[in-house]
Length: 256
Image (cartoon, rainbow, N blue to C red):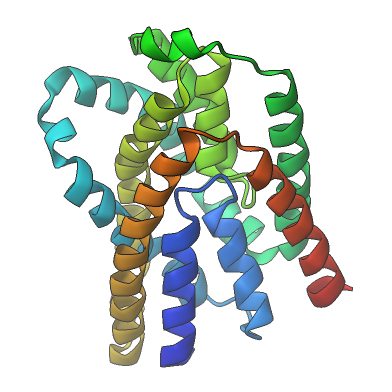
């Protein structure tokens, strides 16, 4: 991996982490476009530079983590993913992260789901003013939706957002909750990977990780602000269309 590769991958991570298009899926596919063979380091790189995106959320929403009641609900929402992620860590890293085909299918099917959901989902403008409270039960259900994103290409953001919309939350509130829920989810994934692999990193690999981290942080800040502005006046159908197009293009130019 070169310095330019680390910059490109950091940009992709920061730009896609919070959009409902799957950052992990894009990372797997961009690795393929760059000609990288799957190695322990490239797979760890995809996981660890998520710390940049985490820092972006913390820098914008640090006050939310001082709210004890909100933190409790974030923890409850994290539980399903934490259990499933720990149990299937080896399967995900050994098999799923090495399969561009799984990513392409997940992107494609996820795009169809986004479009169909938005076509049938309706919410009156006045409902946006009557914010639904985040109960522990709702938080747990959103966490179950998020756990589907253990499959690369599904998108943690898409799963939590659609789950929240299905439960009756407004677009802005569920998008912001998705940002907050990303923190323990990605911290856990990154921490687990560092415990298992950090001792084997070379000096050059650590430098690559640092570059990816910094770029990811900067781009994620912009991505978060843009998404919040976008959802106030738009549906997620454009993301569904993008997922379909991306899946087809990657299938044609990378896998065919």
